[in-house]
Amino acid sequence: MKGLIPYLMFPGSCREALKFYKTCLNGEITKLETVENSPLKLADEHKDRIFDSEFIAENIRFKASDDDPNRPVPIGRNFSMFVEFSVEVEQKQAFADLAEGGQVLFPLEHGFGMLVDKFNIQWMLAFNPK
Image (tube, rainbow, N blue to C red; front, side, top):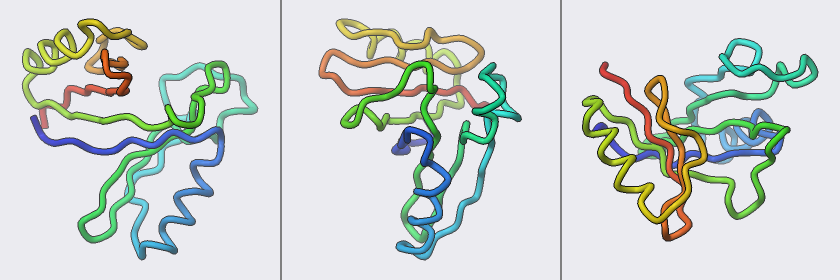
């Protein structure tokens, strides 16, 4: 495993939140990818929503995005534990173990899966061999 990263989800205000955190925490937005440049297929009015981003300030690091407007994420569930794996078999095993007694939100496909475990914690597991 490469590590655990908090992942925040916003109802269309991700860009605004990142700018706020940049000012408050004297940090930097190191990645900002919009829906328009992603594999998501959303209506054109949502093309500027944030698909994925990363924020870094000294020892602080988190990822963030806007939620899918067709499946809004309720407040209180608008964060995930994001874990990146460099070994695919470890990712698959962790996903299966965490899903036991929980609910799969996005099946593990194309190196990514999302679930809620039996303790009601949301997880995103990504495979990145780099």
